[in-house]
Length: 228
Ligand code: C5J
Image (cartoon, rainbow, N blue to C red):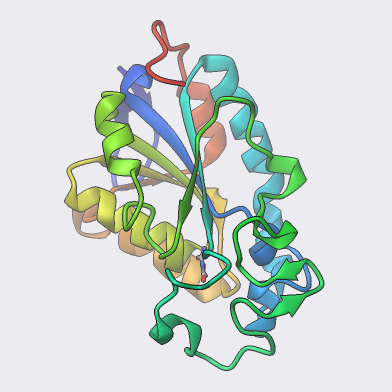
């Protein structure tokens, strides 16, 4: 077992049964003109996560860790986007409207894809999800079960929305989750701080929190890669 210095205490994991999940590092959230900005957010707040996540991906690939990427988005006919989501808030461009990077949050459009810096490597699964959580209406759970995965290292954006929802879903399903603080980002610094605190509070009510260099230092090569 590898051990990471984390909050609320040491996080133990077996690299052979651990997956790195990179949540929604898409242009629509990370770059000007996308969904995040249409909601009035400053995308610059998220960009500090890119370099640490790039280093993390390189280390995880070198160790043979299972790596899974997710993207939030919808079918072109919006049949998987509930009206409650479509009509929520007061964005300058709604989901499905044409923007500078194509239709907002629609699968197949440039804005929906993962930023070039963190592009998935060949063979790394990309899970398309219509909701905030990566388990809802996807085959993530089945894939993890098939791969014998029991621990999840979670990164991505945004901390209090899709990262939190996924960690909560995973926690209820029995996964041991480690969230890497420098590799998750929020448009709101106060939500970033509170979101991380909420995970590790009460003895790790949802999981553990650590910095990516501590995780990388603890990472050992997977002897027998599971399924990617
Ligand atoms: C949001 C996400 N914030 N990936 N999505 O709408 O967190």
